[in-house]
Image: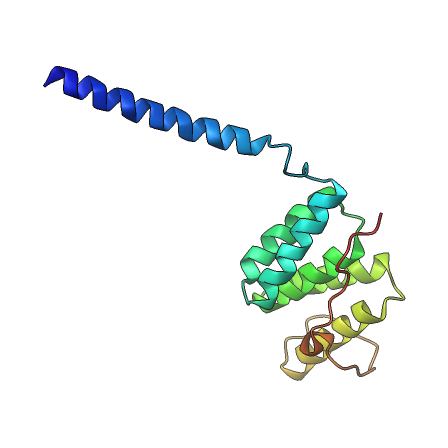
Length: 154
C-alpha cells in the first residue's frame, strides 16, 4: 500500500511540474509577441473589437485597458473605452474617456459623432450632469458598426 501511495504521489508531482513547466514556457514563448509590441497591440485590439461586437463588454474593456497601459497616446483606444464604459452603464467614465479621445484628436469625425450621440442620449434621458454648449446632431457610428481605429498608429 505504501509503494502505491508513493507511485501515485510521484505521478501527481510530475503532472503538477509539467503543468507549471507548460505555463512558464507559454509565458516566454517566442511565438507570442511581447506585451506592448505593435503586434501585441494589434492582436489585443482585434480581440477587444471581436469581444465588443459579440457583447462581451467586460472582455473588451479589459483588453483596451491593457492596451492603454502601453499606449496612452492612442486616441482610438480612449474612444473605444468610452463606448465600452457606456455599454456597461458607466456614463461618468465614458464621458471622461470621450473627452480624452477628443482632446488627443479633436478633428476625428468618428470620435466627435460618438461623443455627440452620447451627450444627446444623456440630455434626452436626464442623465446630463454637465453643461454642453453644442446642439449638433449626428448619426450613431455604433449602429453602423464603424470603429474608431482598428489598427494602432506607429
